[in-house]
Length: 338
Image: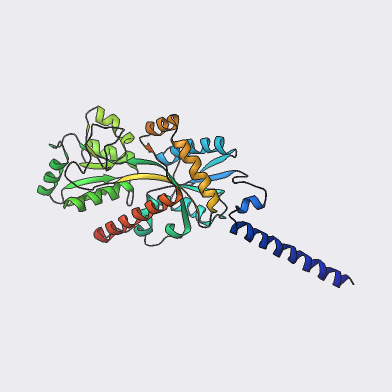
């Protein structure tokens, strides 16, 4: 009797589970979000945003503005969790391995598009294991030189480098950093032979640029603007398709004689593969509204960046384009990092 009763309970348990699954399937087919079936709207608890770099950098600062505004807009806490290391690999992997519920997000950057082809081995594939949600900001790279050089524009620099093949050095924040890849792109597209000198961070690189140990660098404006004002460094151009609102009087690299040249850092929110479409759309819509706020735009500009936003579909297309661009660069330069 007891065995029979237990069998009936077990059967009933699975029957009800099957019924729930069928109900959920019918609701999804009718366009009703799965979260509604459980009586919950996303987000219903704290959302963690992983930043794959230490505190104080642009990715961290921008993410904190967004997290606070998302907390206000969506009624749940958005918490920043810095997990730096490995050119972003450590923090990225945390999000890749997280449950695909939308409660662990990544504030990622340009390195997501480049790392897939830059490193010999990665514990994930960003194009498959992460889903784009929305851009949040872009930081154009600025082409800057030591002020002692007899150069006043991009054309002068190209001519100068061609007369000294293998003798003109460019600094970067490290092997594989965006500042490194920008310099490599410039060398390829101008037909110049520049020598890459990697540093452990932007600060040491700028210090040696000022002292003349290296001649040029592609870098974000905040790291160099004070040295430009004091006359120790000279800005030549911005590596963006359009002139930067941060310095509208400065020409683009394209205007200086390198058609189509573009190199900038970008930042955006990603989730683990399989994150519900409803959650992605809700975050993207909230960020779009946040980024159109004058207050937020001024905050982002003060960090040397430009606020940005788009839909998950638009960001996905943009991410594919960026990844393809780096594939072509690495085929030409054969850059790899162990």
